[in-house]
Length: 102
Image (cartoon, helix red, strand yellow):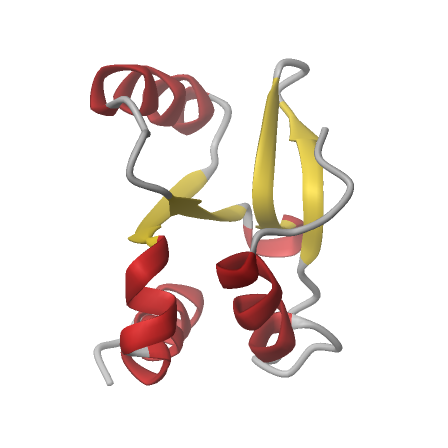
């Protein structure tokens, strides 16, 4: 588990922490006994992942399937999107949290 967040994780955390979106998010949470979620809203079983340029799509897809079998939904964003378009990243998270398109 990483101790220091990446710059994009730190930026998104400012938008998620303290129930700012109406739900409690935690950082760097072990889920399913083997995976570490970047951010987790446990009450609604929503995982938010930030992917850097070196992420493996095959491994990510397997992980997402494993977590879906456990009842978790996963949203993935490119780390660059957090820096270039944080408003739309947060909007997409809100849509998933509330089950509506904003």
